[in-house]
Amino acid sequence: MTARLSRWFHAALLASLTLVTPANAQVGVTRPVRPASSTSDPTARKAWYVRKSGNDSNTGDTPVAAFKTIQKAIDSINDAGGDHVIYVGPGTYVEGLLITSGRGTRSGQTNKPNVIFGDPTGKYTNDAAGDVIINPGTGNTPLQVQSRTDWSFRNLVFRGGTNYNLYLTGSSRLTFERCVIRPPAWYGVYATDCPSISLIENDFERDLTTGHCTYIYNSTGGNITIRGNFLAMPGSNYRKNGMATGSFDWFKFSSGGAGYPYGIIAMAYSNAAITSTINITNNIVSDCYLPIYAYVYSGSSSARFTLEVNSNTAAASMYGLYVYDYGTTAVTNVINNLAADVYYGSYIYTQRGTINGHMDHSALNYWDFTAASASGIITDKVPTFTDVTHMNFMPAAGSPAINAGPATGAYAYDFLAHARPYDPSKTGKALADFGAVEYQNAKPTVKVIRWREQSMETER
Image (tube, rainbow, N blue to C red):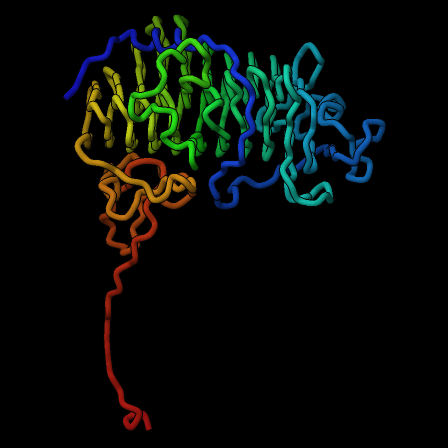
């Protein structure tokens, strides 16, 4: 069964993001096991060091003379040449970081960002291994970036924000990679008009009290890249908020993101002739009202939008995907996505775009697909995962998601950096598996080229 949703349904969805703050709660570390990062450590033109044992009266330019606070290192950057790297040793830093024009913080340069680099192994700071945690405490925000360009953040844990953990406005070329972000009751990442923002392989700590993971909105053009992030709620909280069954408390619509959390919200919206690309790839999201919400609109015929939603997994949520383009020149591709164990199903509307492979299993089959070209849509099979309790969203053995995706177009690598499609038998005929993770347990077929028996007597 299909059902046409209102073309203005997105307005109601966004209007529902009026929030209040419930009580704080502790959360355990919920991170999937990832392979080593393919991104090399930054090379510093100028290096700064921050350690829990440091002192802000030091020079900060060696591990022995390290600063005590990250903010002191940020404020010490005295030129706009870029390639400054702040190495931060393990420990909890009780501070809210400000990278703002009002504070006089320096920007980096294109392809030469300033980097705040968490050093959890102690390689650079000579400290014992441990997480690098930024937690400012109640009433503060762990990180604010306003009107600055070319900053990058790696291997940091952001916790403790009251309304936001990352508050980003009017800043371009910001990258967050391999960070851990715990959404407070409002937003984990809140970014408006930040062209060329990238969220790469971050893990979101979630439980039944956390709110929306990301809200990213551009009206000035530029790119939004959201790739390889883990936004699921595994362990004992998986399927516990009622989203997958439609049994959650509807009165919580007025009680904050913790009542009806969204996963990824990424939008470009303007009446001007802007150019914007949104790429959402290889993300795993569960237990949300809307796990992935991607939307572009422009009233200008000169606007140029590209929207790609490729090889994502959405699970145990009220809806599957919500993808909507209303720009007169939008190019939208929805490829190889999986919506499993959702209540209503997905809504994909793209008048000129393509749907190239999509698997959707919902309780009510309330899905709606509209595209100029649509192929490989499967809505009548039940996909299964290997072990969601332990963060393993790989298709289980025998899942209909295996070897069922499109012949072309799926992202070349999966969430765990495995080449896609997985073809252990080297047949050249394998297809991608639906979703963010390729099934890897298949055993290759052994082909016997030649067999010859010899007795010991023959060998003598």
